Amino acid sequence: MGFDIPEPYVWDESFRVFYETLDTEHKGLFQGIFACIGENSQGNLDTLRDKVEKHFSTEEGMMKKNNYADYESHKKLHAEFVGKLAALSAPLDGPSVDYAKNWLVNHIKGIDFKYKGKLG
Ligand code: FEO
Image 1 (tube, rainbow, N blue to C red):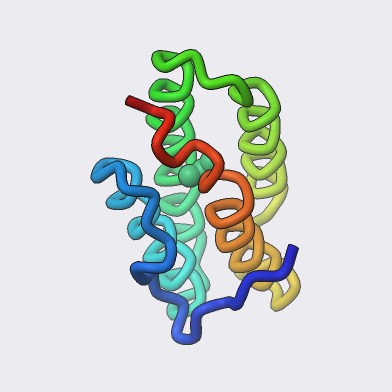
Image 2: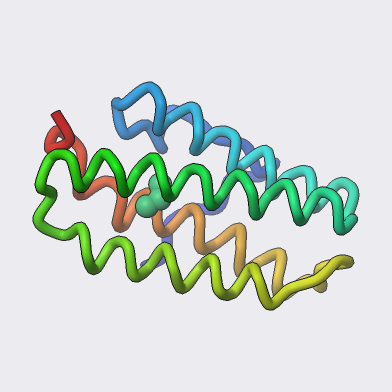
């Protein structure tokens, strides 16, 4: 997968999944990573982790409620990213920042997009 990485790193309409809560949370994840680029602090990394975990919980809840067929495999991808973030500490190095930036873009467009129109 290789979707374009926005520069500056900000959510745009091309990431819309058409569920307001999820689009709002996705915007927040972009902001969370953007904040870590601006001020590479443990506080911003912790905030990003919180936002990520809250978003995955919301999204998984919606998938489960709607008996989404790819729930288990999608959830596994979320858990992998949470694990990667948990292993990081501030200040993040360049490859870690790039990993997070790439992961979010490719996850939304490559994986989240598959549930469009299927979550009720
Ligand atoms: Fe929006 Fe699957 O994370």
